[in-house]
Length: 463
Image (tube, rainbow, N blue to C red; front, side):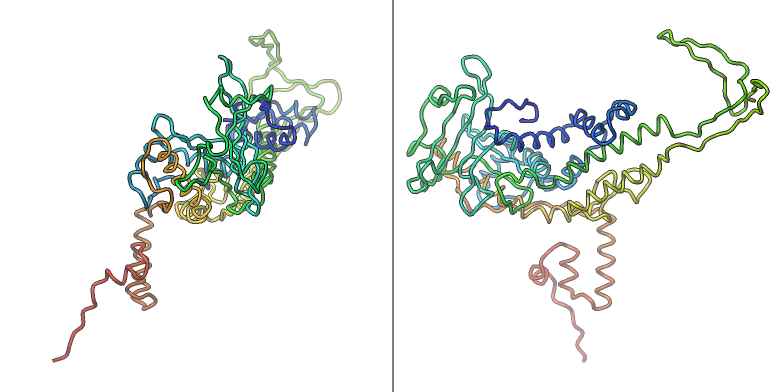
């Protein structure tokens, strides 16, 4: 994964701003953004106050939580209409498990690719994050690539070296397409295709083709927007990145306040406490202490002739108010992702808060229905790519198109089902629903199917 690597991939410097931003998002997903949070705290409150706050904790990451909340399409294995044998091979190769992760990455990074290969007659799928990719889109189709360069580590002469896999189905001259697959050494720029792949793959020898000869890229590039305006849309949902950093700053302030300023502070003027003891800690430091307990009586002696004064300041920070602000900000972020506050649930005791950024069962079903059109085309194309690659590699005859993917919605709980039946029967009794509509509503059928399966109504004839 690109997130585990330094910014030393052999992609051009023009891509570095996009790559840096993408890797910030990856660090937020993987819990490795503590240094980024430290920088955000210094930027907002200054170096001195940042040191006083101490080491921040990256317990929560709203970007990660939101991406996980909407990545619910693959909780169950989708149903595939088409070649059943291919569907079985795809499932056995782990595509749907991998798609659960690639959806989460696509939602957080705005784009994510899956590369398909055949190794020893078996399908393999590999996630490629956009920090390792650059490309060129097709004219008039900004989200569909016709050329991709993937930075990847390969073993060259016994050493791990950065290389670029360059796949282009058009070539330099669109009027005379000439597809190619090249491997380029990252440091030297040398074409090492034959050393790595054993042959050159250009023009007619380009290996990735459908049965009718059309070349394709063995990648499926998903976009969270569903209708991308460019190949990566790296800056989309930037407010979620800013919101995650701000949430981290607020959380650090809350932790600092809870540890340093969440209790009333006592003060004394013109008196000295009695019964002071000197104590030494494990590091050799000494401190003057007085035993304090709800049942103890604190004794003070006058210090000079001035009038003694003993008092107490109120709590310096209202931790509860800060926590409420923090959670309201998270709820605002959830709404920018199209999540309804009514669908957010919390595992803690305060039902008003969206801090958990988890969805109710109905919220999950709503998100599944919303996201299904975004990913269905990509899943169906992955099936077609898998069939074409298997056919070229093994001589099989799987259909290279015509697949239909249906996602399994989260089923109703027993309580939800009972409530639905009761509401439907009440509407039926009031003649607000037909028998067909009532059956369809309860069983999840369409109206035509419900009408066919209903028994004919019984009638009583007069004598």
